[in-house]
Amino acid sequence: MYFHSPGWELALFGWINQSWQNPLFDLLMPLFSSQVFLWTASLTLTAIGLGQRLVTMTVIIGLGLNVAASDLTCSAIKDVVGRARPYQGLTQTRYLESESWVTRPQSSEVPKRKGSSFPSAHAANAAAAGLVLYAAFRKKAIWIMPLLIGYSRIYLGKHFPMDVLAGWATGLAVAGGLFPVYSGLCNLLRSRWMRYRLRI
Image (cartoon, rainbow, N blue to C red; front, side):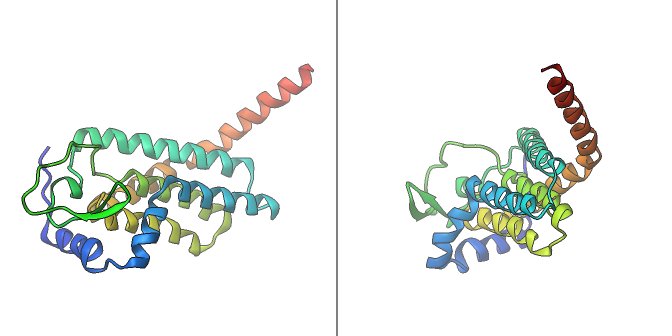
């Protein structure tokens, strides 16, 4: 499917990916873009919440359920849209290759396609996890996590700005839609666990 990139999106991508690049961001953005960052931040907050009795089993189940559902939703959309990633087709894009920063030259072969760009699953998963954690803690600072992850995906040349915006929207929509499921699922698991324990 052909995907039109408006001028504002290409300009914003150029600013983040090229004009605003600096050694500190070159070091930090790959870390923020790692799935390890999302899970470490989420599980750390969950552990703190358990200690403060702000987090219940509903939140833990919600985290896993949301991230899995948002990831699957993004995969389904990616298969339909098929938008190429910036580093695959946009000249002057900076990206990491073999742990070194390179710039895609004006005349170069299009690299073998690895995945689709729209929407960003990283951004979707971070937004979905963020909504669950915000519902538990009610701290606005939690939204820094999805913002950092989304920004890092543009900085690394993996996604366009609209990919990230669509990812955030997808994650929030999936999380919001699944909220009514958590309590029922927790009650079902608790009921089965109690029945299992009573058999012993």
